[in-house]
Length: 435
Image 1 (cartoon, rainbow, N blue to C red):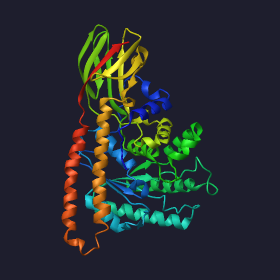
Image 2 (image 1 turned 45 degrees about the vertical axis):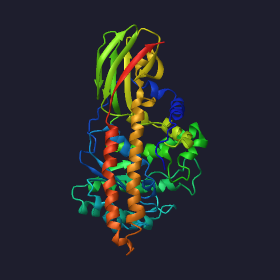
Image 3 (image 1 turned 30 degrees about the vertical axis):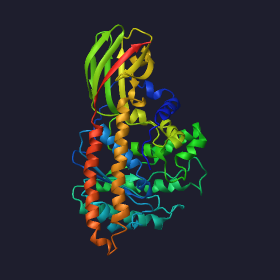
């Protein structure tokens, strides 16, 4: 699975057209500083735990990428510990206590997310006995994680939806209604245990309903098998988790007055504002990188773009605002580091342009972070799923396995360093040239 391909430009053009200009124009460049600080802290170690939907390493990788690019100076480590088919009792990777010991506690986490329920409810109408097994097992899971990891901060994720929106329900009421009853229990348990809670069901269903109204054919492809979302659905799931963690919308905000040459900025530093022969230029060093909105899989871009256009992702999490007022000419070409980024009217620039939706050098840098995020995760996943678990009971492997695992663990450090170095923002030269 390749997180980011090279041919992104077409995806950005298509996505912008679907959104209908919303992402390009946005609102005036004003910061949206959250009243509650972001949930993750410097030095945190996050373990994502769950079943096959977590095992896909899509919403988890997108969450990791957002955090690394939005908080480039925050030292947070990530472990992806989903296993297909899992329930609160465990599954193919072992019984629950083994899974928690090996795949959670071994990493000494300070933050753990848990998403289970899709398999637990057994794809049938609500059954009290099945539900009680889930409730008892989930309580045991939470108690064990807290006991074995003192001070751990838990986020319990309410199960993502079974798609009863784009296709007929399999039985009266549908399977997602059953999952919502399980989700209600998860919310209650989180409250009782002092844990955070993230709703990955209702917002995704709302997105599916909008997508269904706009394009039924591609809406059905967002969760093609009704269980495992593709990249578009997983992006909205990542958004839900990030919102639960009080993630900020703002990448940066730069406002330049062309008449006075004065600039204001939030999460950015602006210098060298110059106006000459109708051309306006300045240098800006932003504090964060934008989140790439092009489809990670260009071969399936249409359902991804539809999911984004049917959501509030741009407004909620990806605002890199540029506002330029008091321009004289009717239209301008925006260049960054000498390369054309787009053409805008002076009215569009005065209202605010969201650079996060454009193919900028900042976005290309964020795409590199995405590739390194995928690579780092792939190495760890291979270590875990190809060597650690399958070779654990092989007596012949015992002689070489510890050193192999040690070497694979050692590879994480340079990959993490490369990921974090790539996420450090760089200064860029901006210019507006009249048409």
